[in-house]
Length: 317
Image (cartoon, one colour):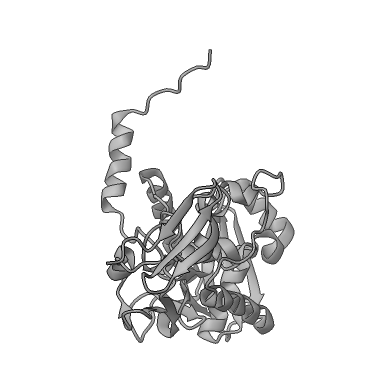
């Protein structure tokens, strides 16, 4: 008989709940975070941009882990200042955290800051990117260096430099197990950064899902599929969510705006979440094949993969 797990004490649950109650910024991303731009699966990026799958639920434990990461960022920025390096934490133009935007505003991120006076190049302004690692990840980073050890972080650094028109980034990492530090100066690679931006531009403009990275999500090599929030839509024949971004009328415009071609207006975040009675799914978000359409009734008929017929547009009046 399998032993039952020990129950979590109410005190611990109360702490997690306190973090959840204070959480902000939950819900769907309005654009593509620079932290995911390195993904080999453009399809997963497209699904996330189109709000096809439910947004990630960030529980109290994960909220606390994020808070720990933020505290470590502040601590390491203070360490840099103590070492005589000038740290610029906020954008003088806004008084807020530096923001980066590329791909017509759809590719976006927030910077930890800029630094001037790095001993290896005192006169060069650097983007600064701070990360914390567990012991295994940290040692892997030391061995392989950033580009091969943490390619997703390397891409972030490149995109930040491109957005801020800088040529160097200081990557500073801490080992959470023993407080070991790792620093690496990254040179800007304009062609590399441009390729990543172009990839995201294509994802934004696409009105159908990019090809699957793996046809069988249970293959040994397809481990990324196991954790993908869009697996139900990509592999398990589930419908995408009902919202404006899954509709054929949604147009992704410059400045990260979504326009409804049917109603000829820019949609707010709340509008996009609600959808409307004229909603028609993008065909690649329907788990089946289109077999008929009626332009006058504004309906599209599909044969689903389970053999049933389904008519999209029945909500229309």
